[in-house]
Amino acid sequence: MAVPNKGRLHDRTVDLLLKSGLDLGEDWGRKLYVTAKNQDIEIVFVRAQDIPEFINSGAVDLGITGQDQIANSGCKLEEVLELGFGHCRLSVAVPEQSSIKSIDDIKDGCRIATSFPKITKRFFDAKGKKVNIIEVSGAAEIMPYMGVADIIVDLVSSGSTLKMNRLVEIESLVQSQAVVVTSKKALSKSKSGIMDMVNSIKSVIEAESKKYLMADVPTSKLKEISKLFPGLAGPTVMNISGRDDMVAIHVVIEKSDVYDAVNTLQRMGAKGILTLPIDRLVQ
Figure (tube, one colour):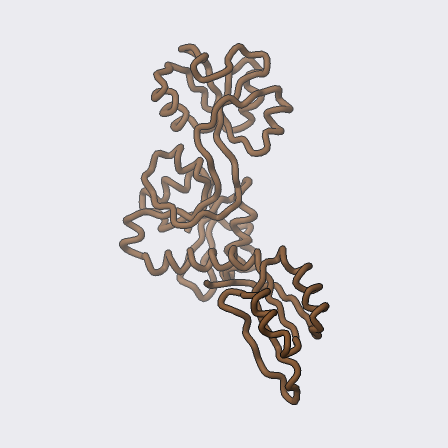
């Protein structure tokens, strides 16, 4: 499995792997590859832009990278899980004072600075524009100011970096987020292992928005509580030894509902209310 060795996707990717139960050892941060303890899984740390090609060539079975990198590579891969982070878009941006207000205004010979040359070329070829693409490894925003390029194609998240560099976004090429990606060949060979990894990561993401709530509630309020807290398949109800007037309930609730849930239970006479984090949740 290939994961980004640095950049905007690195920290969250490693966090998901660790929370999914993979033990990468104490010094994984200083290695280019590690084997997860007690698992037949090897993790390689490489550049996010190289991961699609590694998967396409069969060097690795799966990886985590951005949809922007997959689109730029041109490789036909299988996205098996959207991860909900690293949201951005690849966009065309021009200087604020430029006469270019849309793609139609771009003249042949226009110089475009970008770290995404392949998808940029495909985009402008499809528009019938003969542009000069200048590949840069970063800091594309400063290229118009330096006189190196007329416009740029770069990743945009909040747009604050464009604004600081007096650039205006005029069109988006692709929307992007982090995904787990593999290939048809890898799936045909190692589908079980790949899906085990995918489902492990998915269970971590599912759990992060939930809380496990436990409380002792009046038996007379049980029907009302069951309606208020349906959980995944209704609350789990257990008898309390020596108490006919109270039962214990366990239920999974949304993290955003904890404040109201605890206050509601208190008003209904509940005691011993506890909320706990959930490491993984398989639905």
